[in-house]
Length: 78
Image 1 (tube, rainbow, N blue to C red):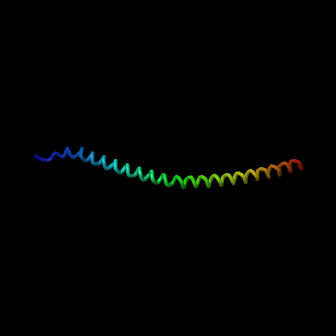
Image 2 (tube, rainbow, N blue to C red):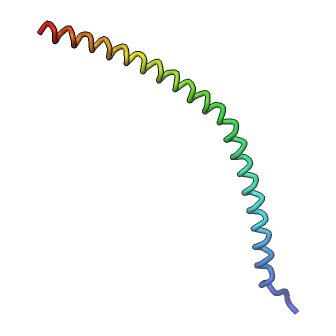
Image 3 (cartoon, rainbow, N blue to C red):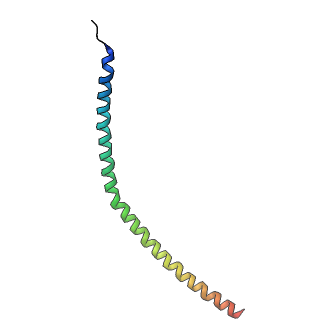
C-alpha cells in the first residue's frame, strides 16, 4: 500500500487558509495602528490649512473692498 497523495491537497488547503487568516489579521491590525496615529497628524494639517484659508480669504476680501472703492472713484471721475 502506497501513500495516497490526494489526501494531501485538503490538508495543504487548510494550512494555507489558516496562514492566510493569520497574515490578514496581522496586516489589518498594522493598518489600524498606522491609521490611528496618522489621524491626529491629519487633523493638525487640516486645522493649519483652515487657518491659512481664513487669513487668505480675509486678505482677498480687503483687496476686493479696495478695488471696489477704486472702481467707484473712477466711475465718478469718468
